[in-house]
Length: 270
Length: 337
Image (tube, rainbow over all chains, first blue to last red; front, side, top):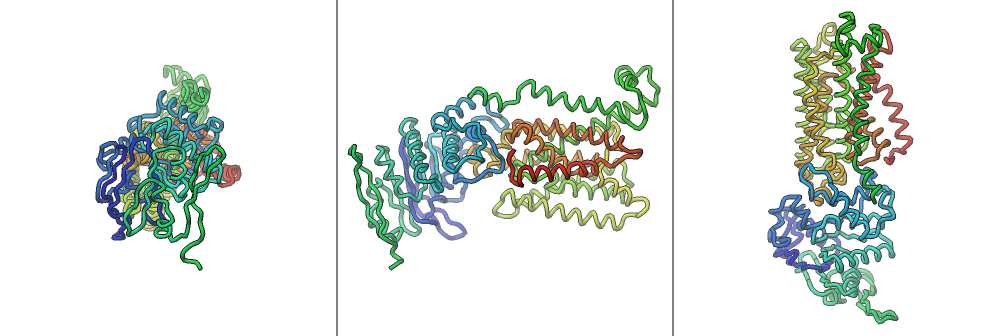
């Protein structure tokens, strides 16, 4: 088991956000955290990443309590693709990817030969060689996301945590990102814990043949966890999001079947 | 790939240039001064102390040399601290005085001049108060539960303002004939009173620069934001203390021997960024080298341009300000090379 979250509860100043959430991520599995805004997805990731340390319950990564890990140790087990932001200084793409190797050097260590090799490998794997020498700040949102994915991959951690990775990407770039991520899971044995607003994502992973799990969070209600098809149902969408929707299945000419969510309307509007 | 890799590490040749350049500036500055000494005499004084008049030997070895060395260390210290602060505070407009170092040092100098007659006390007090100001700023910034680099900058600004008020009080109570001029000159910044004893300040400066130099890779990571740096495996608090500690040793020691010299800590890192890019792996050594060269040349100009000495702080600001405006125009206030 890569990640085991047991009975996790967390409150911000007496406002409970997570109560008694349990979730497991096994090797090579993609787990998508779903749920409305404010349902605690990012909070849960922050607990896993050790940014929030005052939670109750337990979080173990590769059998080790996350609270017992030092920063460099934790970074060897979990890498992180944050939400998009523009850094102050225009580092090159290669310099940004190389940052993924930080945990592998000591407190003072600068990256060495194998670190350059590992980041070059990550750059190739993610397919961003074309702009590896360009300033990160000049890239489009879609390109930057891939750079952050390459950086996370260069970190060589078994688990990648992503916080709404496709939030600001267009249709094509979103797909490109998901495809790249899928390849890393399939061929590199990476496990993924990903918070997302797109219900399509777990359905996509499932249709690509990945071990996939969806966990739908909702404030004051127990988390629902299971195969994407069991969780993303019109009943759950109505109950948790307040949206009238149906899950439909479509096939392309090769017979590949993809489920998708069709939205009829919000419950609040009439 | 191979080419890109070589671009990231400092090559041996590049490192050699960075090391030699300040030495060249120091030696160059020895040839000029108010007392006219022929170049051959300067060389003789440096090499074997023979065949030169005692006055020339004193001018070169006792006045110009320690002054140039002190200027080199101070310039390097201010520049490298500015570069480090810009990275950890993720703000290209930050300079080496952001955490209240200069105002703290200024108050210390005032106390020494007013109550202890100046002299060696000026150095000791300004150093102590400079360090205290940074410690206060750091904790002021950390009081808030949500501690970010922004609150630390805020802490520095508040502590700076506090010490600047204390400086005003000291100026108010200072004797306008015997003490106030000393305070005013201290704030203009100058290396005029440097001799060999003041070179002890090179010890904290060297130590501080070493701490920053060793953290140069971490500075890149820290400049991505505290949360991201933590997820990449940096112990943010430890690294910040090490870097801020190093920068404080540097600037406090620089300011205590030279008075307030602005702009170096802001402008030199930016010249470095334009020359070699933003990665701190290169920027830190480049800032050290350029800062040293810049200050040695500025001090040379300060003592030779006119019949009487121009305070070097004024000269730096006079040259630094238009340059900075040019820089802002060129980068449109944003910030790319």
